[in-house]
Image (cartoon, rainbow, N blue to C red; front, side, top):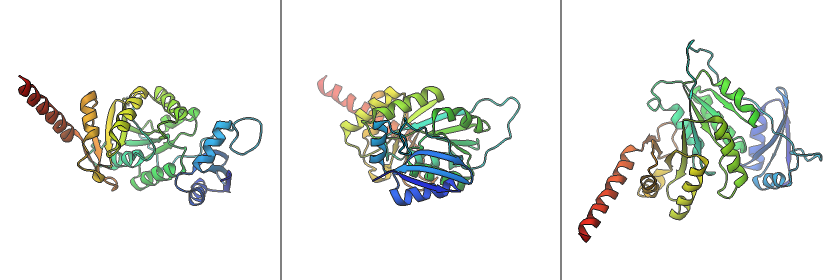
Length: 291
C-alpha cells in the first residue's frame, strides 16, 4: 500500500482518518505544519518498514530521510507545584507489540488505589502506531490525566518538563517484534536518557514457554527490572511467567486480568509468592525423595 498523506486543521482528525483507512496498526512517519494547517504522512506497517530500511523520507521526496516532529499533547497539565518539589518518579513499561502495555498503563494511571492519590502523568513514547496514540490519549482525556507525547528524541526534555508537576510518570515505550533490533536500540536509548526508577516488562500469559524465556532475557538486556503479566483472564491457569520471575528473581508488582479500565489491575504479590512456595515445596520433596 502506498504512503498516504492527510491534511486538515486537527491532529485528532488526521489520526482518525489514517487509522480508519490504514487500520489500527497505522504508522505515523512524519508530521508537518502547525495548529490549523496540519499535514500527516502515514503508512501501513509493511510500507513503513520498507521506507525506513531504504532511509527514504516520509513524504516521498528525495534528499534524505525525513524527521518526525512533535505533534501535540493530550490532556490538561498541572502548574501547581510546591516550592521544594522533588522530581517525579518515572516507571517505564516495555514489551512486544500487542502485549497490552498501553491498556495496562491506563489502568495504573486511573486506578484510585494504585498510587493512592498521587498525581500521575503519562509519557507516550509509542508514537509509531496511530492506534497507540489514540488509545492512550482517549484514556487520558477520560480520566483528566496529563499526557505528553514524544515523536523524536529532542522532544523528551520538553515532555518531561510538561509533566514536572506530577508525582509519578508512567512511560509507555514503543513495542515492536522480537527481531526488530533497530527498534530495541531505540528503546535502549530512550531508557538511557529517561533513567526510570523501574522498567516493567509487560508480557501476556499463554506465550510458548521457550519464546517467553527468550523474550524475558532479551528485554533484561534492555534494562527490564520487573515483570508484569497481562491478559491473565485469557489463561488463568498459566503460571509460566510467574515461574520465570521466581527463577530469575525478578519482582512483579501488578498483573492485568481483563480489558476494563481501570478495574482489571491487581497486585501480583500473592500469585508470585504462591509460585515461590510451590517451587520450594517441590524442591523439598525432591530432596526428601533422594535422601
